[in-house]
Image (cartoon, rainbow, N blue to C red; front, side):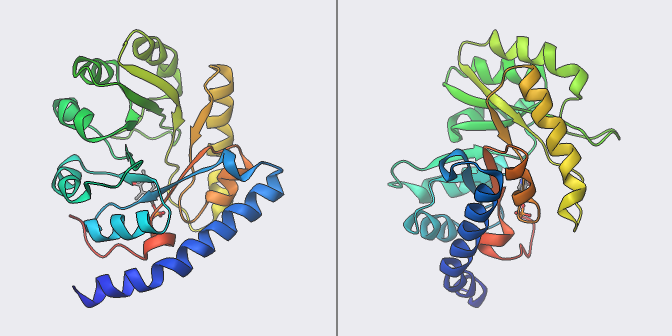
Length: 230
Ligand SMILES: *Cc1c(COP(=O)(O)O)cnc(C)c1O
């Protein structure tokens, strides 16, 4: 085992405890029950040992970004009963069939074509619509104006269960910069009567919890900095 991996595994228990403390404090401040917020452990770029150790420490929801990376990791994760895997990275429609066999939830549905490809794979999937709120054009995420049509498209898919909305605000060191994006996502979800909000990462999840996040996606704060792309 590499020294780097050993260090991450050693640091994990106290990092998990710190993240849990931050979640509890944010929930108290927001007057929300802790059970309202699901912590997704983002394990992209990390080896299967990290997922196994996080599972042993009580984590059950995992976020991965890359279909191929997770395809290689998945066989090493047999026997983790109750573990749930969420795709939180951009998904190309030509990988929809593979992704539907690997993940329980696809958080990045951003086109009707992708929804239809996922549906065609005939596996029941929970899905979130990824909304792009940053203004400038982006590779992933649907614009708010596209959401009504996208909701209709997903609701027409019998194998997809629409859960809610997901967004990734432009990265900033200052969590307050994310707040208006989180507010916008919540307002969009309320307008369309969607219950779940996936928003908030290591640097800004407290603000996301204050603004109604039901799913926070945390990597660095649990496992340390990622040193490489897969
Ligand atoms: C990598 C990633 C995260 C986790 O980011 P951290 O800053 O490491 O907590 C969350 N969401 C998405 C979509 C990501 O790609």
